[in-house]
Length: 165
Image 1 (cartoon, rainbow, N blue to C red):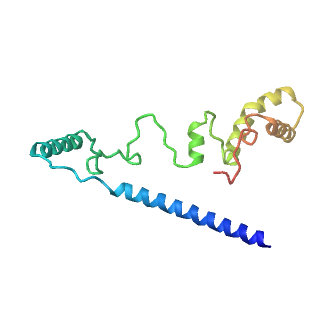
Image 2: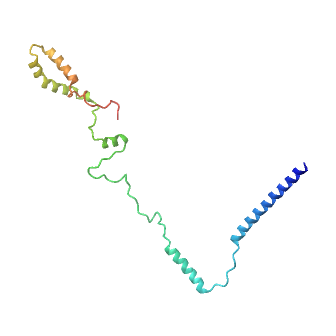
């Protein structure tokens, strides 16, 4: 019991000494910065020399340009595009500009009637020659079957979905 009290006192003394030492070091650092020897007499020649050296330092320093001295950057939104260049403001437009394949037809059904009429005119004579005994309705049915598989049919060509952008 007596030993523990002595140990505690010794530890407290050690902490106190350590704190005092740290405090003194800190005071020395602070005073070390502030204490300067008073300079002796300064002559006019030394003063002029100091002023001149300060001016030389100022002149050699690169002046940072202010926003008023900096040239204005050209506004890329106002630039007129050169001839032959493409402009895209949305992702879909950019993809369309960069893609090399043809645009997809969004409404092939609008061209269906005219395309079928042209197909019928071109192929009806051939079907009549191949099947002379068939009636006109039978020829038209056969023509319709061929039309559904024909590459001339707009529905068989690449199409975009109705609601695609």
